[in-house]
Image 1 (cartoon, each protein chain N blue to C red):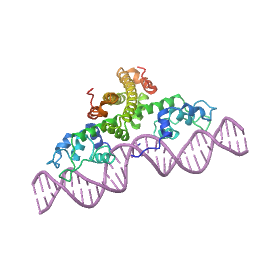
Image 2 (spheres, each protein chain N blue to C red):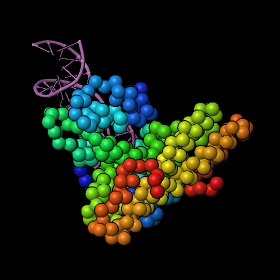
Image 3 (cartoon, chains in turn green, blue, cyan, orange):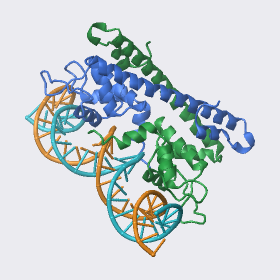
Image 4 (cartoon, helix red, strand yellow):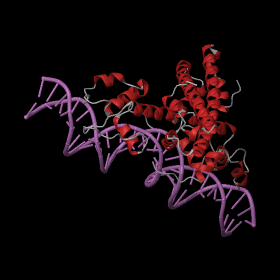
Length: 165
Length: 165
DNA sequence: CTTAAACCCGTAGTCAGCTACGGAGTCAAG
DNA sequence: CTTGACTCCGTAGCTGACTACGGGTTTAAG
């Protein structure tokens, strides 16, 4: 398990997007659109991650126009942010690839089936999260009330799961 | 990325718990409580995973009583299920370890701080999940309505995130 | 008393998802 | 026309969370 290297990583994770980094960046700005570095800064990931996503077909690798350097627009940024959001929600990159394919609009039936399955998963997660939320709230308020040294029996409800608030 | 081996895995993931496996199991049942194999079957994980959790201090390794074989009770099962639920909700094993430590009830101040931080995370996830849920619902019903071959502009809202339902 | 299913424990391998490295090319600014 | 921040691309390494392997031990059942 070990403990991670933190700092830089943390900054990335917390700040999420990094327009400062974008501004500070003295990049090849003559053309329209962003460079990969700028996209990464705004999207709150690092360049290598974007390249990785491109290899895995999660993001398109844009054509280069007049220059040797590729340009990225709003479209790509949206894609990137979508990927990140979906990940937080527990979708794997493979699943996200599928979701993004849905966006192309082909294969309506499969699309629907997948979407419905995902919807179930999401509903289950919502229920679990709500249960967890109420358990944590109880824990916090019990702690606040002193409760003979914080025996915190609320944790039981957390451990036994299922909303018994 | 690659495609996984599926079948067995899938069964595990879908069925979650496996009392059939438990029943089928001709295990060392003279003593009270379950054996590790039974715990695994009921918990819907495999034995190796439980041992792994023990090494990582997520689960206690119970003392052996009269026999060379360790026995597990409700307590351990609850722990195990809690771990699994928390994982689905996006907590890492490290975080889950912390959550479980809270259950011991010591260190009230830190406990509270951690719990409050977790609560924020959970609230954010709830919001994201709700947004995704509504986006998916739209997608599904749009598909159902035919919508000139499923152009599915709903995906846009999914991609641009934030609930604009 | 044997047998075979389960157990024990240690170590090694796997897979997803990054992250780092290194050498070569590009290009805006000085 | 050099410099240095940034790009490109390929390959290698890392981390978290398992999963498998293998040799030895226990124990319920026949």
